[in-house]
Length: 315
Ligand SMILES: NC(=O)C1=CN([C@@H]2O[C@H](COP(=O)(O)OP(=O)(O)OC[C@H]3O[C@@H](n4cnc5c(N)ncnc54)[C@H](OP(=O)(O)O)[C@@H]3O)[C@@H](O)[C@H]2O)C=CC1
Ligand SMILES: Nc1nc(=O)c2c([nH]1)NC[C@@H]1CN(c3ccc(C(=O)N[C@@H](CCC(=O)O)C(=O)O)cc3)C=[N+]21
Image (cartoon, rainbow, N blue to C red; front, side, top):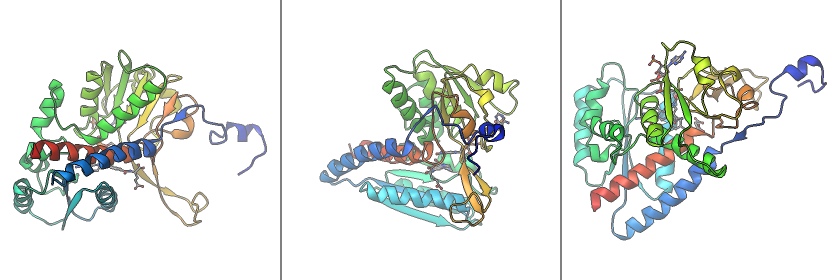
């Protein structure tokens, strides 16, 4: 890179020092996993080993990476992992039969069916077939309803992980989330909608943006807290962000990386979020990186949910 301070070099956003605090999701997830590991050990003394079943249908390479990461962490925590990798042509009836067997298996306390499923399988039929007590993703209607009503429920892992990062960030500054304006970009059942429920429960004023929203950047600029869950690389630029806002980037996007940018000198892909990190980190108060932000927290919260489910099932 040209280090001469020519006007164009100064304009290069990658040269400027970020002013935002970078929120370390890896460290936060390691702390949570340490707590979970200790609790698993004490449950094991009562003869209960929490078990998590992960079901993956098809060969989506990104999903295989998540499944592998989850398996590794599950075992590290002292839990049992049951992996079911099925071919993409698996029929819905076969998948429902597997879910029924896992529901009836006393060694399995948590069930996660990796989404998205192949197009010929009805996603909601499968999610509704999971025993709500074992629904560690929190996607069953009974758990969704409980979350919306503010009742005790297994809450979706990614939004729960985002809340932990937000609470820690504001606690470090001697405050909390109450009364703050949160803008969520995205309204999926997995991330955007449950995120709104959790922020509302924490007394935020919540605005939800989506693909039909008008003037999204202008609305987003009013936010004290921004949660981006869209799936579009680098969509959120500095002009979307109020100075000092706390930005949580949920997006996981794989983009092509040129040979010059790659540490190995070979053209390959790299992960980026929905937020333009280089630009936004110059204006935000705090920001999560991708990778190393929300992703590791999702897995830690999944294992925390599995522990909770195992405790309830063995009480
Ligand atoms: N880090 C982690 O642990 C996880 C990361 N992810 C990542 O988060 C991202 C979002 O995932 P998910 O919620 O499942 O995605 P979905 O595709 O289900 O939802 C995307 C949402 O973004 C909205 N959207 C699309 N384009 C725009 C736009 N131009 N402006 C405003 N809103 C827009 C859509 O609006 P509409 O409803 O109108 O279509 C939709 O609500 C993905 O990158 C995914 O890989 C997901 C889960 C976990
Ligand atoms: N039923 C279901 N539940 C899910 O929770 C679910 C799902 N289906 N389908 C796919 C999405 C995506 N998701 C991620 C989890 C962890 C990382 C993660 O660990 N990311 C790391 C590393 C990623 C890498 O390097 O490949 C990081 O961001 O640092 C990413 C994405 C869960 N999802």
